[in-house]
Image 1 (cartoon, rainbow, N blue to C red):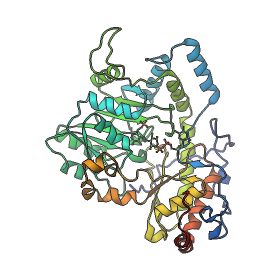
Image 2 (cartoon, rainbow, N blue to C red):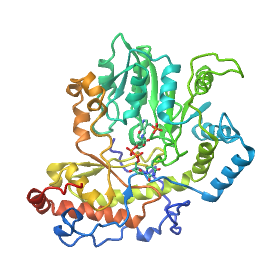
Image 3 (cartoon, rainbow, N blue to C red):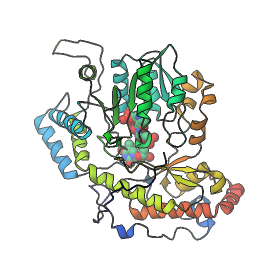
Image 4 (cartoon, rainbow, N blue to C red):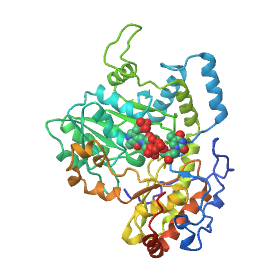
Length: 443
Ligand code: T4K
């Protein structure tokens, strides 16, 4: 969705000092935001052709946010003193409570990671046969199903929103279909209403993989309360992290009770097991990190937003580049900076640009290349899936994600934008050099 600028946008840039990579980072002074950097004076200066790297250190797409290190260490001391390390400890309960309040949902079942959370959820909902999911997602969405012996049926996405296409999803429903999982890719909500309606009409389970969408809203309601249940990821690379972790959120009492049992081997008492279960528990240190992250949530979002705004401004005039926009009428976490490269207009393709960026220590990512349908075991099991996934195929050749988060400064963003601008401005000469020398084998 290319969201238009609206009056809803209330953006207050905070003027704070810069801090190190490891502690709660403050925001750069706004005046530095669009500093024009002398990046390269000629094509030969590009690191891919032997020039000096633009950055001496590697810039990752999703370097972890740490938050208040002192507060975290105090909590860890507390855990050690109490000698209660896992199994529904006090920090876990606080963390779950905080999420329920933030999201406005009845139940939160925190788990050791979102993938296991998806597996437990799929099992608890009794998913079987086939489940429709987008192919344009992280492998975990498909793997969690296939791990349980359920076949993921890959659906195409909308080119503008990057999210699952409900019309095609309906065409993929068969007698074996038991559910649909929508993914809120990049934190931008998928077409929730159409998917819920579709699921209701066909009596299917409807779940949402909200791994990217913590603290985001849809139609002014927080993501987490839609469908039968939704799942968040708190992996280290997510803007709110618990080192590793995730949570299933739902308004359904019975489902929540089942999920709690299933994440703890099905135990209902010391010697009593009521159902099949696994070990999906989140430990106390992870929960403490989660509480720490949530305490800095506004700061982290502000940093992401500030980078997003800067990328948007500075990339606006670069031909062939479009930034995936967030709907300013909603709450967003702005944790992904997603560019679409139009090779014809940019004069250079996404893959060549990626290699040029990596040579400069900008570790841009081709999320979610090559699409789940082209990964094993699906490539072998469903060899003709590509035929009905034209938009997925189109997007996976064009998308690249750029560094953001608290480990990146506005000067870094300015340099990355200037670098991309330089490469595209000199695309013909860059292509010529590439054709002469090819890429160094190390890249
Ligand atoms: N559904 C969706 C739609 C998802 O995107 C994901 C996960 C899931 C489900 C499953 O959630 P979890 O089971 O993971 O909770 C990352 C994450 O590993 C993965 O969680 C995430 N999606 C995906 C979008 O991104 P990669 O391929 O980027 O690689 P990774 O994790 O090695 O790290 C990315 C960069 O961050 C690295 O280049 C280095 C840096 N890094 C990483 C770690 C772990 C650090 O600086 N520090 C760190 O501790 O997968």
